[in-house]
Image (tube, rainbow, N blue to C red):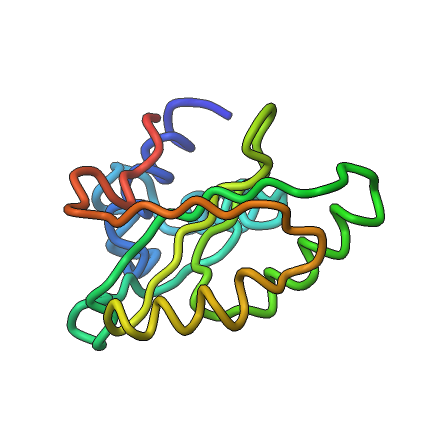
Length: 150
């Protein structure tokens, strides 16, 4: 990866809807080489995809919580069962496995506190192998969806 690839990635992180023509103009490259580079970045997996960034509040998701999860067991079957089950909960918008204790950090959205409580009581607490859940409410997002530092 060279500086031109980094410029391409920086522009696409900023605006994934750029046409290849606009992208080529912005980085000072002709159309065909720019298109080949973008395709190579996609095929290599550096560019995983393109998506719209949605505003949760404008869609009615006005409540956000971080949930720390500690599992009862740490064996492969317990981990796989938990991860498979947590992927089925649409309100979990991010799940990260951690080193140490706790085992996982979940980012959860819901419409309000009541909806979060229901989700917590009915789904999160019944995920496989859960020993303990600790949740904290998000007061404000300070840094969110920041582009990678290229």
